[in-house]
Structures are given as structure tokens and as C-alpha cells.
Picture 1 (tube, helix red, strand yellow):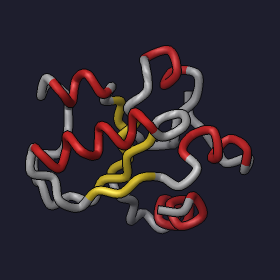
Picture 2 (tube, helix red, strand yellow):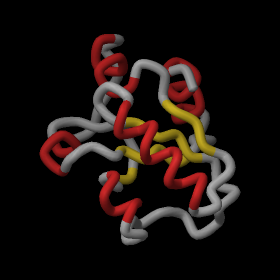
Picture 3 (cartoon, rainbow, N blue to C red):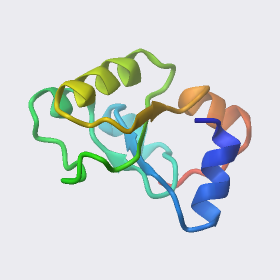
Picture 4 (spheres, rainbow, N blue to C red):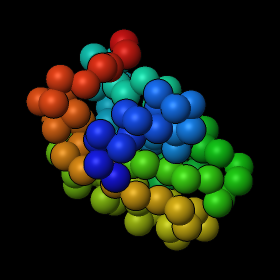
Length: 102
């Protein structure tokens, strides 16, 4: 998903669930408004606080891409079928000057 589309959906109050798989330090330093923190290892161990409805639209992000790609694969294995990656990930989000929460 493109960052601009995600911003529009957040403003329209129709956002997908943003799953941020970065470390706690990275998440606390700034994340997409409304994102849930679910480090990759918590998804792997099935301890992440994810939506129960596996049809929920999820947008997965990390800093540069590899962790998000791995997490998206795990989510697919666990039955989540409506997942996408944030284009440019968090580094691109910040470069675009988009709002983050702390």
C-alpha cells in the first residue's frame, strides 16, 4: 500500500490495521498513528496482539522491508489473507514527512 493511500484512509476513519514489526525502541521512537506493535518474534510465537478476524485488512511495516516481508509470510501461514506491505516502509514514511506518534 502506498503511504499516501494509508494517510487518506486514516483521515477518512477507514484505516486498515497497521502492524509495526520493529523493535520496541524503534516503535517508541515514532510509529504510524494507530499502529499496533507486534515484533516479528511475537508473530512467530503467536503471542502478538493481532485482530482475531483473519479477514481483517493488515498493512505490515518495519524500517526497511525484510522483517515486514517475513512477518507477512508468517501471517499468511497463520491464516491472515488480507495483508500488504507499506511501500517504502517506515524510512519512506519519515522521508515523506508524514505524521508519527510516540
